Image (cartoon, rainbow, N blue to C red; front, side, top):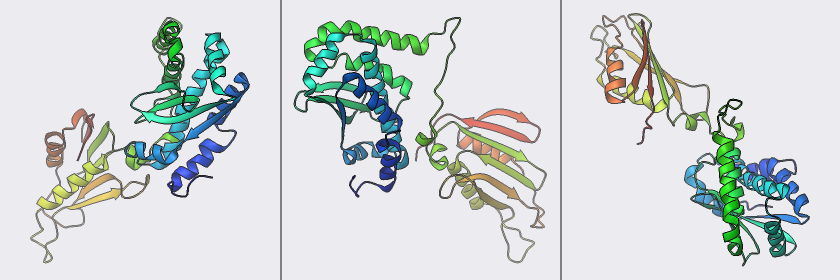
Length: 315
């Protein structure tokens, strides 16, 4: 039973992605257990992991699935060593030091690491801080680190570790006549919510001039639209022909149907219902997008302009 002090989304993630026997990480643990013939025990201080990874996982629903992927990558690398019998002496040493069960102490460091802890009689498995790499990127790294984890075997295992790294590089980068580059299809459980995902570049923006009375701006980056709307409202003239003197142009943000909280994907400028002698031109919008925000033009087609920005906005 996990502490009630853990965030709710973390507790839900533990039940769904960590504890169930059918989860990928538990299936990988069982496979290693069967090969070694001894129990494999996870030792995880979840509260400490949350503190160390807090800034990297603002959406706590992705934290446990990400850690599960990292631990699964380690277990798969270990299983590959045991399956292939790359070094039987290494396996013998591991079994001799385990004292009847293999303890895996899961922690965090700047990069993936594996080393033997004599004090705990187990393997310290350090997952990389930040966004978790894919399963296929981490597995060969952990395999190489495992082969170097015993100090007294370091000199004899360096060659195996180098060979493992070469194999990993070959498998991931080789583009021979019968091979082609591939990418890992993302796991939906690890993806951020739309309102967080869209804060990262590339940002896409389109401007449509739909007549002399309407301009529409669509953008993947909500803060861009909010800033543009605030700027236009600040400098919009009033309509002198109406007693209430309303703004000459209606500047309206439209909420996206995706994500949580206020997130906007459209901004419209209109004078259709204002009986105004003003017209709406996209020129100020285009100048602001390129000159102030630094978006780069991708294409122009009649009354539409497409832009893109690859540099992240920071407040």
